[in-house]
Amino acid sequence: MNFWYFLTALTLLSALMVVFAKNPIHSVLYLVFTFFCISGHYVLLNAQFLMAVNIIVYAGAIMVLFLFVIMMLDLRKNVPESKSNLTKLAGAVLGGTLLVVFIAATRHMNLGNGSGAIGAQTGMVESLGMILYKDYLLPFELVSVLFFVAMVGAVMLGKREAGERNF
Amino acid sequence: MNYQPSDYLPIIVQLGAALAFIVLTMVATHWLGPKRHSSKKDDVFECGIESIGDARTPISVKYFLVAILFVLFDVEIVFMYPWAVNFKELAWDGFVEMVVFMSFLLLGFIYVIKKGVLKWEK
Image (tube, rainbow over all chains, first blue to last red; front, side, top):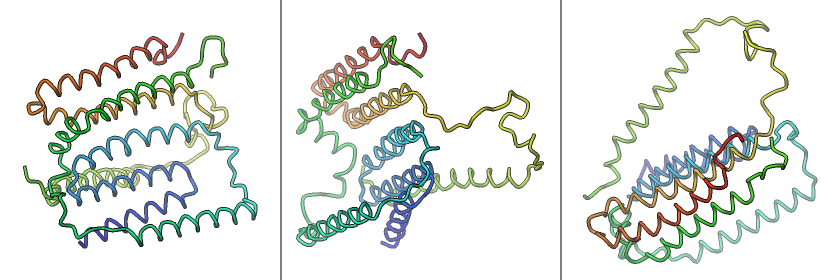
């Protein structure tokens, strides 16, 4: 339990640093650290597969995408421009509304008493695989269609045909 | 196969050892190495051509395209782990399922190759 408090504090701290860091590259590195902390939470929940996938996909692949996006932006022009007061007010109102919605939603949440059908070994790869490839077969096959569409879409949007301007 | 969270203690120890090695090496090299600063020494390429501009230029979208394709195939590999662990229990049904899954991705891969996205220079 003490380790959980330590891990949660570390997660919240690094997540805050993502927002407060001035350098976007530092933000990405703090985000990687946040993902590792969340993986630690998955271990505490005995969900080993989610832990591994979180590191492989999020800390590995998605962060590469983030870095590429930062590299594609022209950072020299990005001198910190001061936002107008109206923008600040709109941001505060939006953020406050979201906070109220979250609080209202969590107040009526029914967490149960923890003695449900979920056993300690539910998150293991073996049980997850048996469920995924037997009960949820159709969504699994649809994922491959989604991958195919994503691939074609990325190529259609990103590919420069011969004759177009190219860096 | 009855894992508990405490079984992952070796992984944490290994992670800590890896991090400690990196920190130790970086601190040691900064501490042990000689330092000599001058405008010539601090140049980007000390003995190369004069550098023009800085590194903050927008890069080609080609890199991003390769990164997106990498993410897609990375997620595809993730789906293969639970299948591989249960390979014997799922038997031929599981094999056929995976062949259907992979054939869609292979179609996408052939499309990507045919479009020449991974070809760098023409």
